Each structure stands twice: as C-alpha cells, then as structure tokens.
Image (tube, rainbow, N blue to C red; front, side, top):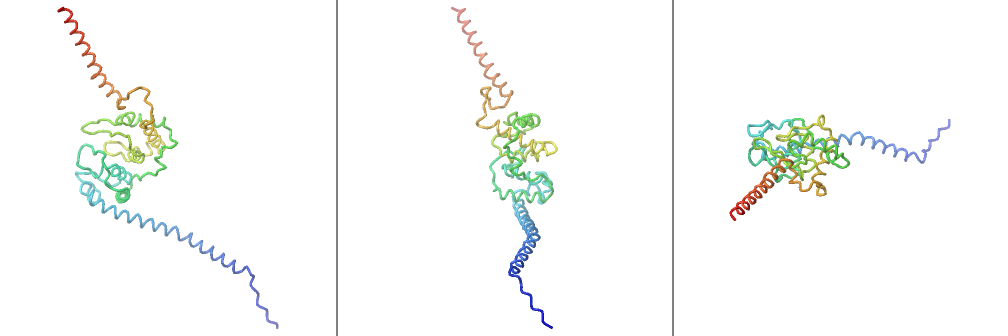
Length: 269
C-alpha cells in the first residue's frame, strides 16, 4: 500500500490562526477589562473615603461627631449625601467659624480634591443626593421665562424676586444669589441647606432647576437692562418705601418749614 502523502498546509493557514488568536485575546480583554476597571474605580473610591475620613476627623468631628452621628453642636451627616458637603464646604460655610443662627459664606479653605474626599466619606455614611454633573446645572438652552415663574413661586419670598436676599426671623437671613456658582445653586435646591427647604426632583425637576439657574444668571448679569430706572439694590417695595419715607417725606417737611418761615417773616414785615 502506498502511504498517503502528508497534506500540505495552505499558505494562509498561519494568518488565519493568528487572526483567531487575536480575536480570542480581544474577547478575553472584553471579558476581563471591565472587571479590572471596576476594581480600579472601587479602589480609588476607597482611597478617597479613607482620605476624607482623615480630613473629617480634623475639621468636622468636633461638631458632627466622630461617626457623623451629630452632637449638640452640629446635626447628623448620615444621609445628607455628597452634594450637601460639596455645597457647604465649597462655599466656605463649613467648617463654621462659630455657632450662630446662620452660618455665612466665607473663603474656602479646602481644595476641590479635598472637598471631593470629604464628600466621598460623608456619602459612605448613608445614601443622599450626589454632586450634580455639569450637564445637570448648565443653564445653556434653558427657559429663562419659566425659570422666573418658578423662582417667584418657590424662592422669592425669602431671596427677593431677583435673588438679592433678605432678612428672616431670629437673626437668620436668605443670602444673596449673586455670583454664586450654578453648581452650588443646584446643590442648594437639592439639599436645602440651613433654613432653606429642599426641592428634590419630585418637586422641581432637573429641567426646572436649570430654568431657575438660567433666570438668576439673566437678572444678575451686567447686561441686564433696568427699564424702571434706579433699582435701589433690587430689594423691592421695602427699600422703595423706605426711600420714599426718608427722602420724600423729609423733603416735604423741609419745604413746609421753609414756607412757614417765609410766611412768618412776611407777616412781621
């Protein structure tokens, strides 16, 4: 019997084998790469929480408790979320200089990286509102007119109809909203800091919040036209009424005194 001659390999066989190997490698990468990325993200988050815990122990624990449970000097932080930390620390309100009816805005003492770490730690204590993305608070394309309606309905009672702020009871006040970062305005609506009520998405949707931010940006812009003349700080009828009483009534009294003096002098002559 004749032996069967060995089959010769096709010239393209090696290339096919190489392509199959590469495809297999790509498949393995597709399977394992997401897991590696998730693990890396989890590790980074854990590191941020650890660093945030250290910052918290130094700057926050004396008032809010070692585990964020709260004390007589500060409320519990369990469940306030990362957005509350980003707002309070990012506007300089926290750490507070001293206890009082209202904590004012002041110079920020932490870097944004440190604020993110503090927010990560506090968020780990309990679920709460997350820090919004730029897409959520960017006022580009928002409805300014709708934002004005929403602001006058929900916010003007305290902040004034143009966001200039106003006095409240017992030493409290609604701060001015001029030159406030849109992100912090969004976070304030999410979390309800201090005396302000919160406006979750079930009350004011994400689009509603963007409309309000766009309205405030428009009325407080340097390009805003004041057709009514001097706005007297934009503080509304209280300031206008005070101006009328002090200067208007004062002018009338001065004129009356002058007329009386002239009349008395005329009678004497």
